[in-house]
Image 1 (cartoon, rainbow, N blue to C red):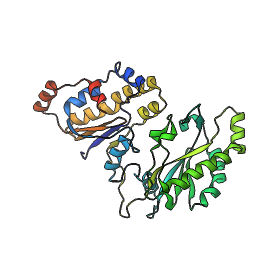
Image 2 (cartoon, rainbow, N blue to C red):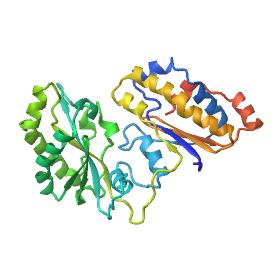
Image 3 (cartoon, one colour):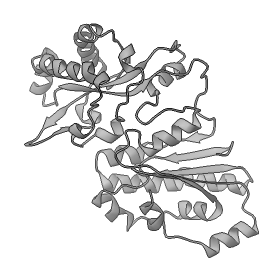
Image 4 (cartoon, rainbow, N blue to C red):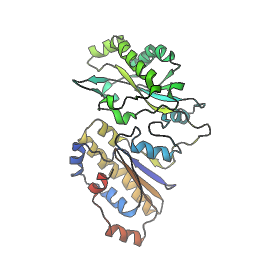
Length: 317
């Protein structure tokens, strides 16, 4: 990785048919120019079944985090970034969510679809906290659809990233390890508690989805000496991710065009000034990074001789 700007793009491509169709129509001149000026690095090879998606793996390396699949301690890292002291304890993100029961499977809706505000979220957290406390877990409010949890249950426990689960069959992602048994029991207990909770009664009357479960992710503890935050030059647009998780491929295409016109242009401008840059494109299985500094005549010549169509590059992610 370079010490300059690093543009990390989650969900730059997806195997979803809607995405493949959208890719055929995309015009991304700044990205195309950028790729012609940078040298490719090694492929971050993975699988769509990995608990930690490629963009989280790339981000973890950029932040100096090393952890097994599904155990990148994002929640503990968040505590540190917010000025707190993770104190070597194990943390997790808890996402209040809606599980939609279909005929033969259960799908988790995107938290954005809940329209959950801080007041309702805090009331639900207060109702759920005593049950979590029985397993030695303390809940703390962080945002309407993201709470922090602290407890030994999360130490070394691998969990699927929320980005893996949204709008998919949750049965494929529920942690099955013996150590996760208390977590699975808590999910069942919370489903019963939330079914008749007054907050949900009011939400249903108002035409909103009820909060009927939760998801744990970002589990683990930080190394005692870890103090690193995100690199100063990191650019991490979330617009493609948000659109892809909602399976809105029209919005995804528009987001790509905005990223192309803004952040990709910014990296090209940095190259024009002789600055070092890195670009990371992340799909659902793999990620690839390109890096470079000033683009001399040899690099321009190489780019002219080796120009892959963007669709070919996207298909490798």
